[in-house]
Image 1 (cartoon, rainbow, N blue to C red):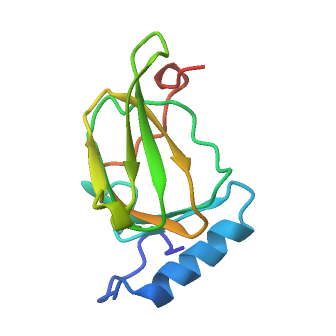
Image 2: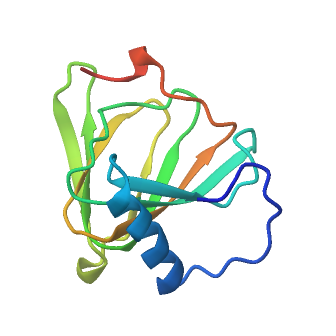
Length: 140
């Protein structure tokens, strides 16, 4: 993972980088790992690779101040949407082999993911600065 305030240079997004971030995700107890392209958590645009392995747990949550966009670079995953009562209202399966590449998640929309394939990597974009998810922005 890149360090906060590390000087940026050109970065090629290729199988070598995806493999490296995937290796880090597999070794992480959370079964996921970010590779940040933004210079700091206070940057106005948060751009990152997110390597995700089956079994990673991402609680149902929302972002009150930003939309979020996922573009699947490899692998397969589901993105699930919920209402305030924790009722599933929609889902999309992202699979480049089937022609489904990404999803835009509106600001305030409850959502989570299910990773369906080892080696899954998304390019994720949100408005900054980074704001940790507050307890009242997670559905339990």
